[in-house]
Image (cartoon, rainbow, N blue to C red; front, top):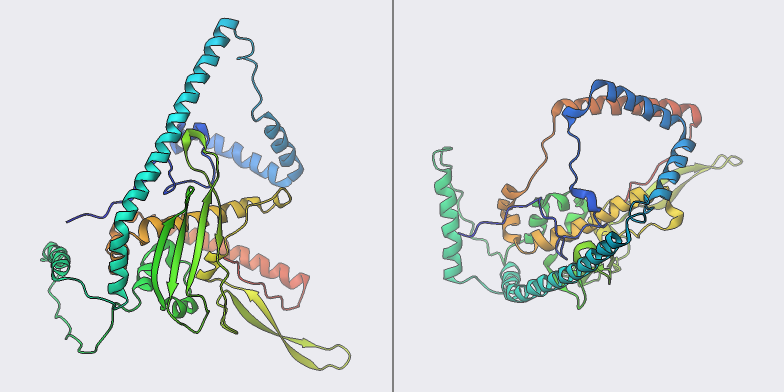
Length: 398
């Protein structure tokens, strides 16, 4: 039985299937100090420094400016080397250029190999779509192979718990596998966090999720839908593009993503919600209901990816960078996890191969207490500043 490939966190050479939003610094593998090396005195000094910086934002800005001006500046060591040594250094740089060329060739060949095998996977994905949507039935050999896996799992579970009585089989005629992709997506942790109850009604009409490579480095995700009451699109795509030039080590560097515009039917846009608020005329004392459309959380915001920050977005650059990284990772999860192993996500078997962070309940309790204190302070400040009812829109997920 072929085992699903367990996630690996030690991959250091990104490809179009595993590319960070930004180039990793050369020193990314440098050893970091462990917790044991931090003394209590150091902690106190750091806390005092943090307090000082918090009270002096101008000081922080000045220090950042000074540090920024030092990036890329030579220490003078290389320039003061003897001429013969400088010549050898230049020679090593020339050899390194040859190495970089080979690295770029390697990444390109890896990409071509991936495309070659993707062409072999495609007929399997097509047959899967036909079975899911009731167009055909699996062969006896395919069913037998799948049942062998089930029998092995049942044998492994024997003795761990008492056998349960099997439910009676339904005689109702059902085509294909209803809500296949919705169920698979809800079992994929990163995607499940984006799916709201409102989204589920639309995602039930999802008939297939496919991907295709671009002629240049990049890929496109294709979501196919049956006729539904939410939008007129038969397919909604999202395309991930890479930069023309390779990064350090010949890696393909992610550039940006573009999504299709969703043609929502009137009143059924899942990415917004309607807020109603009473307004009172100061002169006539009459009240009226004002309705306002505000953004809301929805999986379909995935097709409106965030834009890269500009020079004018310094204050929001960090938040945008995080959203860009999350947006790319979601695309990778769909491409590398969901599409190739959709049946494992549908059954939930793939969850056994996911690495889930463990949380300390004591830490969570402490954070909750702090949040409660913060909220209490915020409420007091809000009461002092204004008595008006201000309703903020929910943040939009990428």
